[in-house]
Length: 207
Image (tube, rainbow, N blue to C red; front, side, top):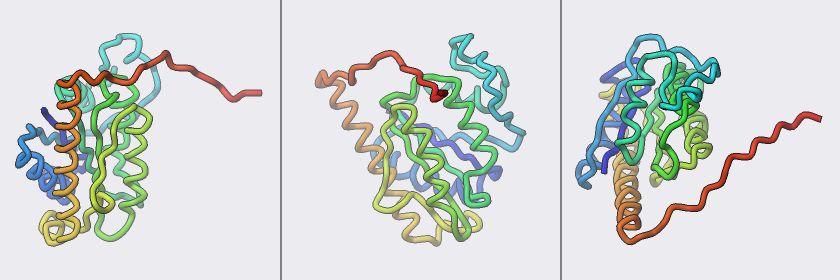
């Protein structure tokens, strides 16, 4: 079992990284393989809904940047944790553009585990989590929570590590994620079938 943690901050070793690292540590203690992926600082093109990704059918975007690097890892993982700093009471522009294309281009997301982590100096974490969690619910994923909202406070990595409750929340999130992955794996081995699927129905509300 493997989980991909994606750092949506411009800072590779900043506050978001510190929070994700705490989640990663708990996952490793539970025997879950992990990979921490940083979206980088290069500009990430927003989705233009050109549809080429669907025409090609390979799940890759026509804009070849960090999104495609991460998309190539999707089939080999059982779940994701997306981390973002809070910018103006919402997720960063980088991770927003990244996730719009990451999910719009399609792929093997259904029935995989997903969790979001928001990091702020002071406020805006719950609004950011609301935004990030919507990617999971529209993709048929299983959203994982903790004992509190998945937010941590601190202006940098050092301050984040001093947020005792936030770090506790991250560790519990990691253990909850590990439990879910193990439960899904046990069900698969026991012969539990995935839910029945049916073709997508599109309805446009134009009168």
